[in-house]
Length: 129
Image 1: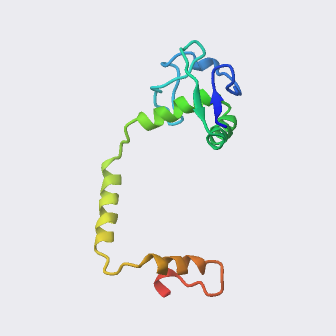
Image 2: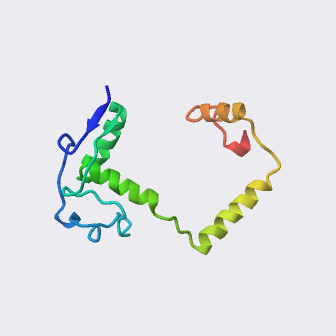
Image 3: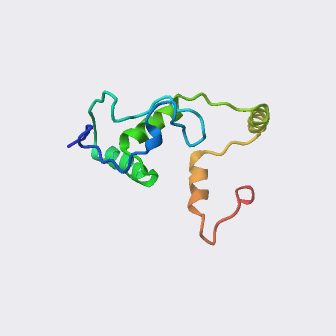
């Protein structure tokens, strides 16, 4: 049976007075929020399964926000463009070139056997296997 979130049934943990308008709300990174949930907004009910409801409830409680506020924040993070500086891009390019230059490739079975040896006396570093 899916859990139905509606304005009347959403477990609200606390309302922050500073979140009254879209201009006052910022994401944890300090960027202005694009999506903001406020009590005066028109709302819709959304059905989700119990596992999804639990997955949304736990971080909302930990952050001290309602589930609609959490979803609005997640949408803000998802909608915000990702910005990387030149140094980060150069590092990623360097790592990719290093990866492409590798001569050997391990098959999945070899990697699984190596991972299963972790924490056992048979464990060896990847290069010493």
